[in-house]
Amino acid sequence: MRSILALAGKDLKLLYRDRFGLFWVAAFPLLMALFFGSIFSSNDGGSRALKVAYIGTGDSARVASFRDQLASSSALLVQTMPLDSAQGLVAAGKLVAYIHYTDTSTGAFGMFGADRPSLEVGMDPARKAEAGYLKGLISQAYFSRMQDAMKPETFRLVLDQQLSSIDSSADLSGEQKGYLKGFLGQLDGYLSTFDAGDSGRARAGSPFSEPDMEFKDVAVARPGPRSSWEITFPQSLQWALIGVAAAFAVSLVMERTRGTFMRLRLAPINRLQILAGKGLACFVASVSSAVLLLSIGVFIFGVRISSPLGIVAAVLSAAFCFVGIMMFISVLGKTEQAVGGAGWAMLLVMSMTGGGMIPLMAMPSWFAGLSNFSPVKWSVLAMEGAIWRGFGWGQMAMPLGILLGLGAVGLAIGTIVLSRTDG
Image: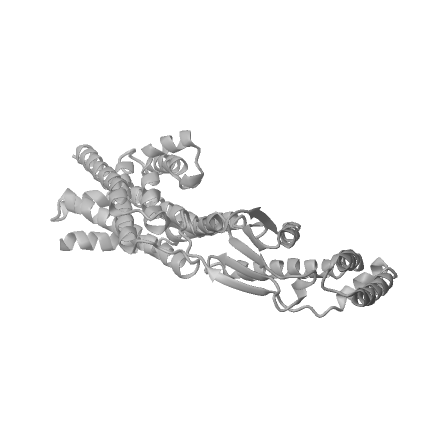
């Protein structure tokens, strides 16, 4: 065991001293995650209209008026529906929020009285930035409707309705009716002298108060990744594993072509110990690179891991799988150029078909079936299952089992071929 650890330490030290090789193992996967994550995050919703549900209670005309005022904003996509349906869609993450507008005020100018309308807004408490933005849009729509209600032509329509109701009222005496009709008539004449510019200046100086708005938290059951980084970091881990496998495969063939492997064979250690040391070094480098990238994702980019034990199992299984792939690649040729070219060609095909470049969730159905033959697909699936897919151990069993099986097959083939070619 001591000789295996010594050989593994030797290979890790050589990798550390090779700064260019270390770049492809650690820095390049991080750059890939940042590049694709920035592209995907630009579509995360900053410039798109917020999808909201609208529920109205009370006076139908005022409810419809406020709904139209909200819908006139290009920043909102408003859908009218019952409250229970709206709450369900918000909880499912399909809508940003629901807006429940209640207007039970009485009289033509009830909007400005003590019983003014109330607003209840339900949304995910984690979306604080959007909550502030939505509050501003709702307030803007509320004030715009108040300003529309203050237009002289609107007041004149209300006065006409009041004059008609005075004539039909049985509670007023003839003298009272005459006094009120005279007053309202003079007011109507005064309002008729306003033009559009005067109306606008009058509204601009009106002291309106904030709407009665209450925000309620809605627990959101997220069916998918919470950010683009939760998609790109599992992908970046594959590039780290690919870089490690390629580097160690080439280092093994270098030791064979330069005689280092033969000198090790002459030492008091057998072939299996030499290969075990190489495999252990590859395994440690793979796990270390994955841990580094995951730490950056969690602590800097807010990647949230739903199953800590699941991600440990996924990383260890994927590292073992790529150790087997490394061993298989190392016997594809007898020179560094042959192994390097064949190895990178095979690894790139695995990455392209397995989700290392195109996310699994974005693949067409026919291509997703083809990806089943790539170990990268099962590595990505296992890591996504532990990060955002919410896999239980029953669901994790298949990708983990495939990764361990592929790793064992690769180790067996590499060891058998190497023993036959080196005698």
